[in-house]
Length: 257
Image (cartoon, rainbow, N blue to C red; front, side):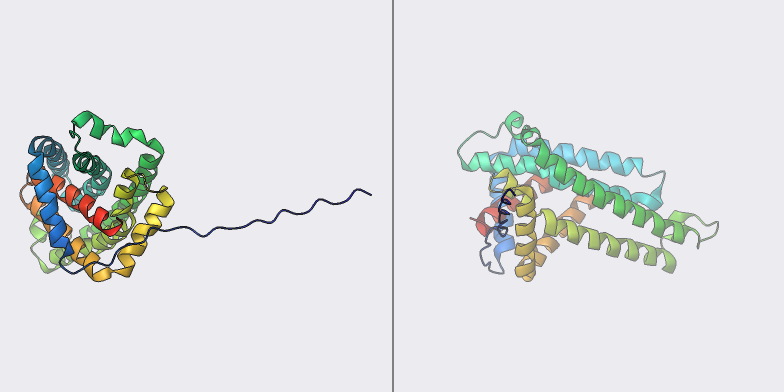
């Protein structure tokens, strides 16, 4: 009778998450100042990329005019694309720190240099966007059914209309918070080539969870500047988007240096 082969022992190694530094409460303002300084050191390419983002947002808003009840869904979809495009800005900031010229070609190739990583996050963002679109459409359908034959636009000033806006913003905030934790530090981490996507996402979520007050302050600051960009018919994003992108890169470097 042949001797049985020994069963190999499987050893599971725990995920090695990147450690995050402890931050002071003034950190978000410091990151924003550093982002502005980086923008001023290369204003032409940064403004050009921000302008492309602004034009895309204005075009999406124009397309939503015929369906104003879905405007929140259109805007949410637009803003969820931002983190992927911000990878170009992270690359620009990294090259600038290395003393290299942040030419548009090399930075744009960042989106295609690691197609697996980019596609993974694009899929993740698409799933979140689809979920938000479904929820937003359901809320709009329920609201539209309760206003009878009145115009949707005229009803926005009513109590029901304000409730509709409040619900849309609250639900959108939940999706935005989830997306913030998943992507805020993981994308610059992968642009830096530090780790794989799964570890980067887990490290980002843990960094947000372990220092909620500072991270919440940064999230509120980002949200306020985003609303400011939208209030300027999206054209303010020509400056706001690159400044926030560069600031996020400096924040990542400080947290996970």
